[in-house]
Length: 169
Image (cartoon, rainbow, N blue to C red; front, side):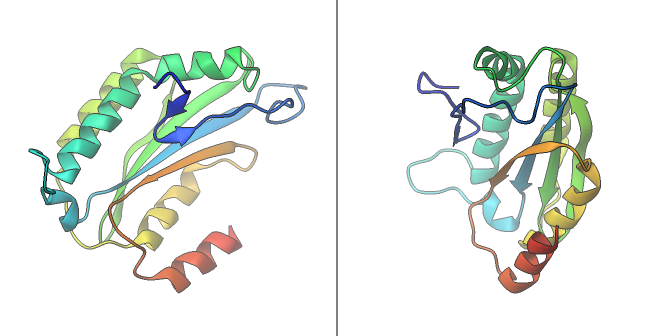
């Protein structure tokens, strides 16, 4: 979090309307997709740590501050106290793995467990965007609102395949 209201590298802005009419509880899914391909193991000039280590440190920071993020969404009127805030984390390379399938963002213990799972994940390989998209689909309920964050250092190599899947969703 920064003073400007930036979380997960996304500028959070509020609208005058909530996510949906407030007739009942809503679900906001915070979905974080992490590139764990081989290039993420590189150390870029000017850094002492690899892209992967920097990403994992940032995700850990974000998870530790998840409750604050939810509180900011409530304060701004985007969420109400009745709304359910869930988070999931998918790691991808040549294939995708659901690292954190479903956790409640309001509970610090869930965020701490998620951080341990992300740090322990050691797989690596190529960069297949479609793999994370296919892994993400079962995690998202039909009526959920999704805030998607894709953390990667590279471009999509199979754009046509990925984009067809995305559009059909």
